Length: 474
View 1 (spheres, helix red, strand yellow):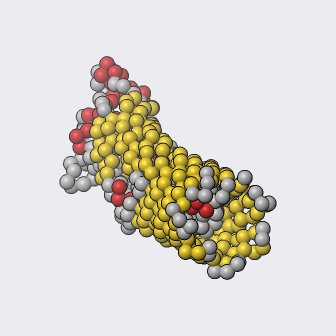
View 2 (spheres, helix red, strand yellow):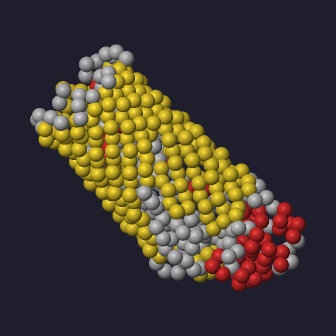
View 3 (cartoon, helix red, strand yellow):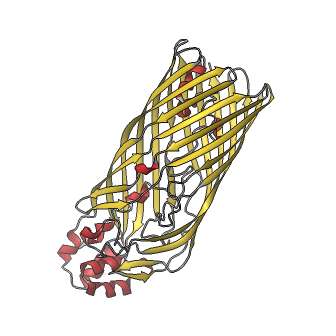
């Protein structure tokens, strides 16, 4: 019996990997250094500190001696869900109205560190190491959220170790290559609509469960969490036309992750007691396991960037970047959670482009002022049927910042950005004429016909970001 209740619970692990609002489109974190953030990530060809490891590793060849860069990003996001229409749960092919609220304040301040180190071996070779967060997000609606049968809380955390080698091929040309070792952790908590799964066991059980399920009292919840290591590589090429003009191209590969996860059920006792009271054998009800192993495979997207930098005069410089990201790597996810269920979820994304333009102004020998703008496409396109925990949309970055040279060996960067994200209208349902709805039947759980039901609303989101950075050379 409980196996049937658990049959659709593997599905929400998808949402754990798809945050409500990433700091860049999709689930990219988006900012890996304050010097880059201050020009809206337009400085891939600038190569002014060790964070060039992330943006174009060939830039290490322009750094002499040893360089260390420590970054602290503080993101203050705002996300609000506005229900529109009647929210429902799916029971026996019928959408039953449910109560709930807008989920409160689902996202909080995020603080993320990054660090980079470079060492010049000789005039031709340089090495470096980057430790940064390429993908990250966390969302936590309250327990009475109208979309709680999709997810109450999701999180995604990644950390990448990126050892790098740069080779100066000629006075004008440099090549960089690195290895990416990426650790990923994903987690999700979600309510399970008790009456719908009672119906899947026997339609006669549903009315009594529904009558006793006031405010979700009989709803179990599922917690799914898992982690893995994945490996990839990155490449960069940089050409210096002169001391005042550079152009480059960089590539960061996809990374295949195979998360080894565990699914745990909570609050099962009220529903179990109700079903025993209705006549189901207690031995059957209470013998079902409350946890099971799960597995999900995910491929993070590769990206290709083309960028340039030009010093107009002794005070002004201009820079730009355009980046293509292969977000269509995410078309579906297969979640293996035996003995619970094997679940296939169709979740198509599109490839995206982003473009940024930046300026720097040398106000005095010790102070440089910086600013930039970026337009960043969303991989969800105009699809209103996006996952409720991933209502991503197009966004614009407006950035300002400064670099202050403390002395010949130390400098600091400060960046402030406002990220304006387009509102997302959401209309989600798993009911489909081509997928008969049989709640509690694992064979029907193919991304359709499960108990999440219908959810309509609008999501408004934006964010302020503060980047702090210390650079040391020695």
